[in-house]
Structure formats: C-alpha cells, structure tokens
Length: 193
Image (cartoon, rainbow, N blue to C red; front, side):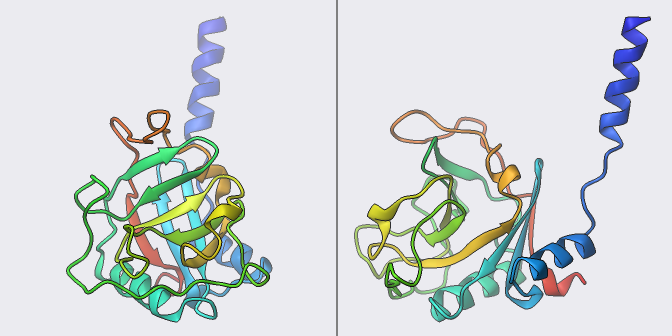
C-alpha cells in the first residue's frame, strides 16, 4: 500500500507543468521588465527570465540579443559554478576560454549607485582585458560588490532564481563542473508570445 501511494505521489509530481510563456511574460511585466528586452533560458529546473539593461550596456545587450536569436546559446553548459558566488555560461567549448566568432565588446561599466552586482544580477565574463567580453555571462547567486566597476552588468533575473539556485555546483575554488547542467534552449521572450 505504501509503495502504491509513493508511486501515485511521484506520478503527480511529474504532471506538474512549467508555467506557460504567457504566464512568465505577465510575471516579467509585473516585475518591471519588457518582453522585447527579456532573454529566456530553459533549464531542466525551469525557465529563467533575464531582463536586459540596454540603458546600462547597449553594446553588450545587443550582442546577447543577436547571439540568442542566432541560437548560439542553445545547449551550452554552465561550465563554472561557484557556491555563494555565480553560475557562468556562454562558452561553446565549455572550457571558459571560448566565445563567438564576433569581435569582443568594449567594457560598459556601471556606476554602483545606479547598478550593482547583487543576487540575480547578470554580468559579462571576460579575460584580464576589460574590453574582452564576447559571449560568456554569469548570474549572481549572492551579492558581489567587489565586481562593481570591474565587469559589465547586462541584466537581472526577474523570474526563475529558484531555477538558477538549483544549477549544479562545481569544485570548490575553481568552480569547474563535472557533468554540468545545460541551457536547453535560449530565446527572446518577445519572439515567443
């Protein structure tokens, strides 16, 4: 009897559906975002809606939008994930050294009084050269004010931090992930509604 109850409960959990794109669009607008400036990431944990901040970083948000619409990010892994810090993705090689074939983008650092690296902030990853951002980005698990003025803020998670919080963590220190989670599909919200 207990076994059949457990099976019934598990079957019920599997039938719980993800919110529809329309429902997420409503949540994005309610949170102050707009569908035409929102990137959607489909993960195995649910959708993540990132509102792009063209007011802070017009060149970087244009790059993310272009790569998203090309399907560049589909299937790319979260290759560097550090507990209490951030989850990094956007490298087609999965090594942290790759990028798109497009030229790098010059830094667009924000005044910390206007925008800061807080939980849910999305920033562009780069090498030691401040003008080397290309396709990689990261989502903050927690506040990181030490990044302010050092990395470009491109957006913020408006919906789906619960999904971000479930992304598989990497090794302590390096954040390198064995069998990493992937972005199944990445698309512009406005293109789907």
